[in-house]
Length: 145
Image (cartoon, rainbow, N blue to C red; front, side):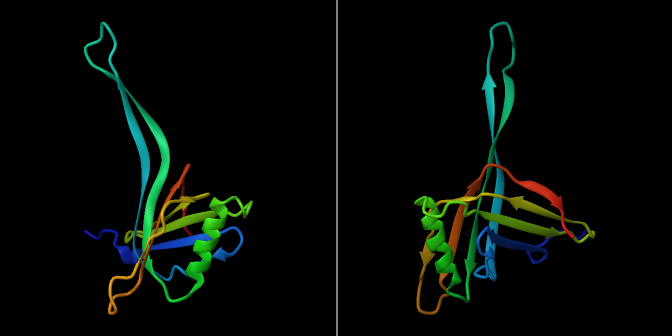
């Protein structure tokens, strides 16, 4: 059995003003999830509770190292977007999965909002670690070329 590995996955961050962000060359890890809730309600005369599921968007994070100062420019732009100083600026995350069986898919997460942006400087010998946590309203899964 051949399973999907991280080496067959790529993460791209795309800006509406700058295009592909060159700061994301060395992604260490990334995860995303489709956020959902299950509502449960009990009613008189019924022996079990009824369930409903609610879609609540997409969230995740990207942990990476970088070789360029471009990452700090991106962080500054994200801060400016949060301050409502860059109308129209939008960031999307594109995850490409190339399956060993030959198929490939892209998960496009548009109009991401970002939480805290920690920058980890652990020691003289360690690489500086960057992390972005994000959330969005939705994601689209499409075939990848």
